[in-house]
Image (tube, rainbow, N blue to C red; front, side, top):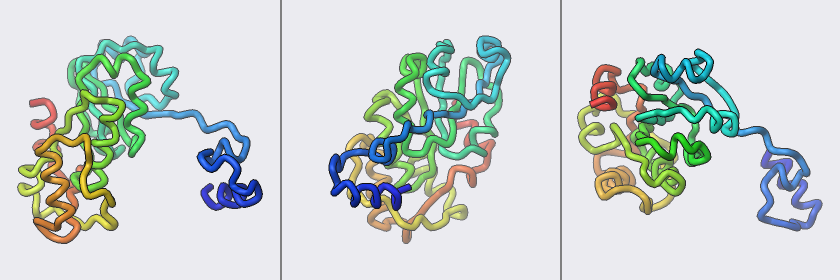
Length: 206
């Protein structure tokens, strides 16, 4: 898509340089769909009995689910591993688009927990999401979790470019700085799906 957009921009002599791909090419954008699992039978009944849902944000807004906890995880497999938990839902696979959940009033009213990969991009997603979800908390993205799982580390390449991230807590920023400065090794990364599920679940619901 970027190649096509660049070609159209050249033909247009870059008129309207701030236009995105769809605007530049005169197309309607694809509908923004997200995937979530409803982790409570009472809440599933309010969604027609459905538990695993992929839908447009505007449609999800009409559900108005009375949730007591919203979990947001990066990887699809992690989200599907969630067990039933009272009053809760889990969103998955949003990448840098986590902030779009601010369009759901029932999400904005609930405590929200983000768990992403423990690397520079995961922390960058967390920081950016707080632009729209300022009450967003993190889980399993701390130095203790990182150092307790040394045997599961892989390499992150490339790292996120920014030297610091404005919306991280001091503890989260310390981890980000440590990763950027190679404090624990070269381009250290802990992918969320490598952490033992029993360990992760105890932290998430603790």
